[in-house]
Length: 421
Image (tube, rainbow, N blue to C red; front, side):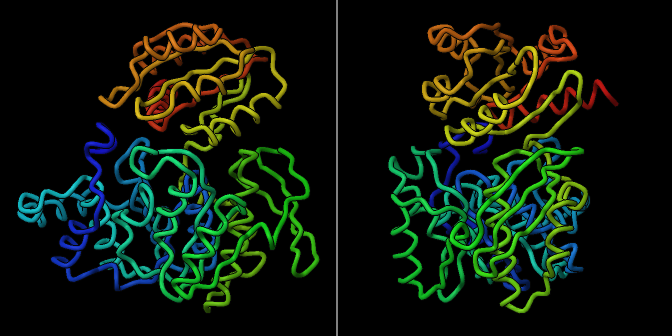
């Protein structure tokens, strides 16, 4: 399982997924799809798109990864997780095939999602890539729209050491004569996408050429944002239930993507788009992105786990008013630890920890790195102990941030739910 052990479990070809889906009579061909890749933001964009389509009355499948508390979070229809019974019956049915071709956990999950969406006759499914794009197990679909969010350094051991190489892998989801929306114009890799789109005869749209953010503020538990629609020269007012400041970039991607879907025959009015963005949590059950667990003290968790993701999360943390910043922090060992440490705010008290999986970075190594960089804090052998220590120390005016890995957030959420259930 890539989740647990990392690169050793990654299979860089589509053969197993093709074999699994062929044995199931290619369920992925029975419904329309939107395919989403990118380094950061693809989870948020996937959930926004699903929420908007639900608001428009479409029966909408959503496939994402990783899960935080329950495996079934990965496969949803209109915000409802796949049933336990379907997971069990599907696994029983294809067990002989699993033993024969030895697919990865992710490959089996992709086939399961496609089979479920086909059996449930969804109108459309939003499919998020797991890792990369070109060789990702999800890349056997023929979507009506491809979306690529921003590109930054992550999984270099598998995707390449330069932004151009990483972008090339993500660009692998661009299909013949299929429109593609690029969330952010990054001059150093723009040509990678332009060239791939030209090769595939695909219309390409850079979302930030059409929309730009004007104003952003946090009010009544929502992120209130304003954008300029550069084509129509009008101002768009939106409220988002996902309140990380970094969502403004994702929302621009969603606005352009919704516009393209309308040209493909969908009916996504301005009010449907507004409601979809505002009701994203209610419609999809999304977790782990600047998720506020409580106030006084403010407790927030965010699954940021690479350089670009951590940078924006810490920028937002630094912009808030509080007495003391407490950070519960752990990582997995295939991330760039030395780079992450340089991003950690110096004016915080740290509670270093390690999630319970073989891929976790050993907490004493993390603690040693941090001390060498002048950070103050303590080491804890579980996420729960680190969170408990932070809560015990924090006063009502303080801020507790839990971040560094999806697995740290998952264990923190589990501990939080147990404590508050």
